[in-house]
Image (cartoon, rainbow over all chains, first blue to last red; front, side, top):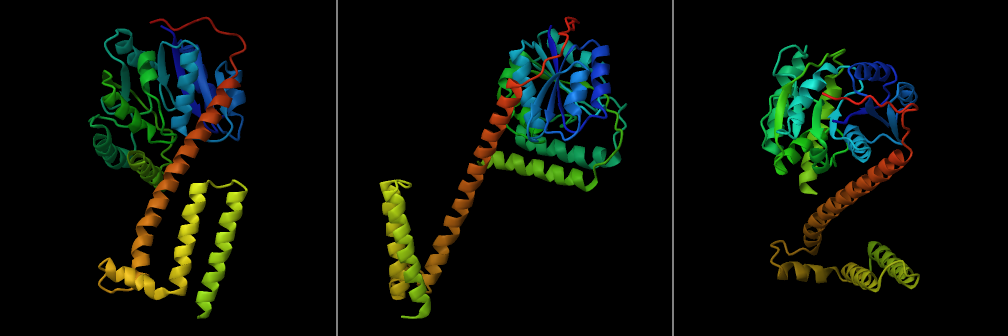
Length: 223
Length: 122
């Protein structure tokens, strides 16, 4: 089945090349990089590594990047889509495990979970503070209780991708996707994946981002 | 008439004139013009005859019977509603911007130079 890997990227010139090389080595020829208003050479590097490159002239956010990539990939005839990160923390080897349930036709969306196996070296603050809060926020907004609410690695069938239109431009898309899975009665499964945390780099920025995400979710409910 | 009343009256006259000229220039509709005119006339009356607002306040059952209190009570929900409307408007503008940026991005998408034919088959 024709598989497209959708990769939103912003100022990722240092990592995007290796990410694409690894994906291609794993057999994924169709990689779509959405350069989300980068000020560095992300687009040029991605292009040099054989990716389809779409440029957002201004930074919109990861959710907007995923939606742009999805629209493009579907137009190109994608049958399966995978959401992947540009920072090199995800393992292309996990994609096959994600795709397997989709290929069997019994599942519409496979969601990666850093919790189902213990290989991910998850920083303490994330494991014991952000993740549990994320799960509760998720349950409140989506009604789904997942072991890992916000792992960016997920795979969808084209049919599911048609049904999931991401309107949350920034980080709230992770919860929005689950909300749509629940609302549209899509069949989903959690699949264990490994994320290599290169650096923590969260701290206050992480908290601010989380608060902003909750604010976006509440706003979406009100407006 | 106190100085503050004179200032209010001058401002109201100015606002009425602006509303009139905007209507003649067709910047606002007839309905909007009427609405603004009524609004500014009410403000003018309240400025010149402040006791009338007291009368309305006590008629509406405000215990203090002060028109100023009535104005504050009306202003707060109106302002909150205005903020709500503004937020909704900003959100819809943001969505429009996203659509435009997405459209341009996809229209100018660069495909790989050598279209790879090795598709992933499981």
